[in-house]
Length: 143
Image (cartoon, rainbow, N blue to C red; front, side, top):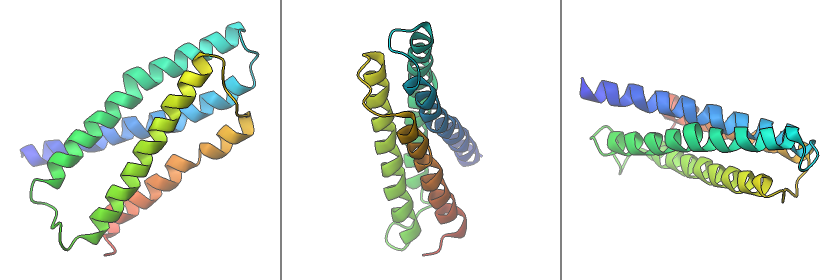
């Protein structure tokens, strides 16, 4: 029963994490088009900081903790489940992407953004592609 709750809360944390990873770059798209120092820019700074601090980062931490608990619970055969190694690599890339979002949030907060809205539109696709790979690996377990 405890394992089922662990899985459920792991999925809930991932949903919250993904929501933040998808929404933050969208905020950057609009923020990049706003004038530095404007009321709009200051509002975006606050939204980005709160999203990262109160939703996205805590959700990532909970996802990792519960994921590691599940990984070491005996559900994974570390020597035979190649799909899990591939999934773990994609989750590490997703975490690195989270790190980039954190850096860009700090850049915006200090009015040091160097990217245009088009860049953030393209970047916004990264978490979706990683999520697709992760879900296929977990559900299909191709190797």
